[in-house]
Amino acid sequence: SVTLCSPGTSTCQTVNDILLDTGDSGLRIFRQVLTVPLTQVPSGAGSLAECIQYADGSSVWGPVKRAGVVLANEPAVQVPVQVIDSTLAGAPAACATAYQTPAEAGYNGSLGVSFFAQDCGDTCRDNTLNGVYYACSGGACSGAKAELADQVQNPVAALPVDNNGVLVQLPSVPANGAATVSGSLILGIGTRANNIPSAVTAYRANAAGNFFTTFDGSTYGSFIDTGSNGLFFPATLAGTLPDCAPPNAAWFCPPVTRSLSAVNTGSFGSPSGTVSFQIGNFESLMATPNNVFSTIGGDYPGGFAWGLPFHFGRTVYIGIEGKT
Figure (tube, rainbow, N blue to C red):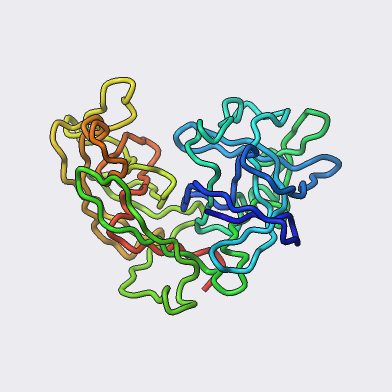
């Protein structure tokens, strides 16, 4: 849950069912669940809006507004957020099929706590046709630059003390899944007694937020992403990881659970470390009464996405750019 307030006021609401997304930066809230007024961020003579596209082909569209955001017992930070609103006229083609409702998306909003302080950074500050930010006026929207201060912000980076990153802590999950799982999002790294690093290996990411993963003899750009519910990577092991039959063809359905491994390397060549993981039969797992799975995955030719299953049984630290 996240608390939103009208900027600079004590008029607030708490929104539950927020997706934690270490692969994105910033808070995004569906219009349908908002009850407090927020302040529109201008863009020239118009209003700033945003189209965010995700690796699975989904997208969100809506205006950028300022809000007071409260995380846990931290003080409110005043930052731009995205209001997810598919009814906003002028959506670009990339967001023509953007999520319309919380029910369709499966969440009321998402909280992005990635490496980055803003969701687009210098690219959107310097380029009008960035594909992310738009200036809207009179029902028409066109590509627009967005100053860093106007971009959707990672609210953790704006905190007065615990602003250099987060810890994601989740317990192990059996190979056949679990009904539920409870963990923690801890704010700050080395700033309080509960977030002191212990036996941590730091993998530096590059400007795109990627490090490298070597799997089955090939090396891919890779990233950490709690917003992905499986492990997604190129299915290069012929016959070992067949796709499921439609309509589940995006997922792997091996006849037996496969034990695999990959080697992660920091973006500048070190350190390196082996990660062991398993991929089970998606359809068989979905037939169980469980909801949380550590062994689901699918074919993703664009790289190696260490999704939610990677976090089970680990404490994963996500450091924010420009912080120590």
